[in-house]
Length: 437
Image (tube, rainbow, N blue to C red; front, top):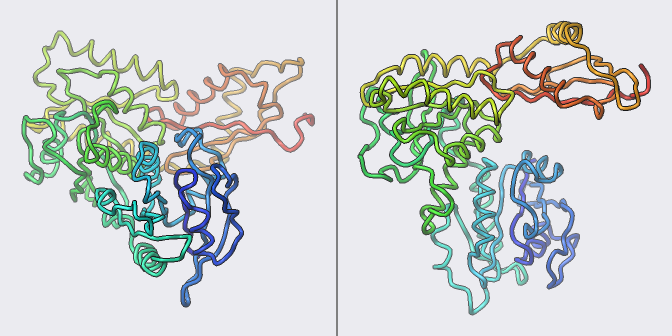
């Protein structure tokens, strides 16, 4: 059964809409903010089709960050097929609405919008036409617009998020405006598929380009140049930035393209952090390398390596590839490293091999004693996730295992299984009875 999630600001009418769709009164409705505090589940039945519908608390006083989002919400977001953003037709699009829209696009889900309270004389549909998804006006309180909304739901649940889903492996090319993203893709495909210009902002939207990587079909995705938040002017800039974030979320590998002449600035570093936080494979591509004097090259590479070692301790060998996109120089090296990174993200490690490594690592360097002077015993390890790989070590006292020893294990694991160029996740969990040695 396909699943639908309602999200939006506080008091825009999500609960009233939920009750309308599920034909229930399970969501309490009053003209008071923050009334819904839990995610409520209902059922929408249309002819022979049934859907699960979730009503969520208002996203008003919560940080919109995937890393800090409540686990329950994240689990439901990962399961749903359609996200409905509910907006207030009287209030229009607020700054908080823009933040919610940006955040919703990072889910990599099909999105539609419902403009509630459209029966009000203050409602102006033209205020909403620039939204980057299909919208429909309703009055959840009076039930008007329900049939059009159900049609929109059924139409969108029958479609994929984007046509490029048919190609499983996607590589996003991101970076500041005029770093050479379109030129890089043209060099890869050996065709002038994308417009290029020395003027910033030539690419105005994300473009999917079919390509090959060692005889495998892939999609290269050219994104509009990323800008600092303070430099986003107008809804078009915001929409392009939202779409670029969605592309990163749905890609397996991200090429962060940097103009080598300009160097890696604070904004580039923020982009790198964003990519790694989304658990994507990352390659730093230094474009226009041919314009860099030999005397400066070592310093540029050393500075980027230092940033990675300081900020991302688990990536001990970051992939930093100099190229000249316009001259097609070093493109083969770039493609070879993409393939290497691709294989690392797809690794499936046998449990017996992992536990053999764990025993060797512990023999080489024993964990310290706990705070109460009891031995910390690492019992076993298993791979718990693929694409990207995640591993879990079970032990008797995870809370007492120091960060330094965790770092030692993460680096040793990455080196043993040739995962030094990706951000692996290593978790530590207690066995059922931590007091049994």
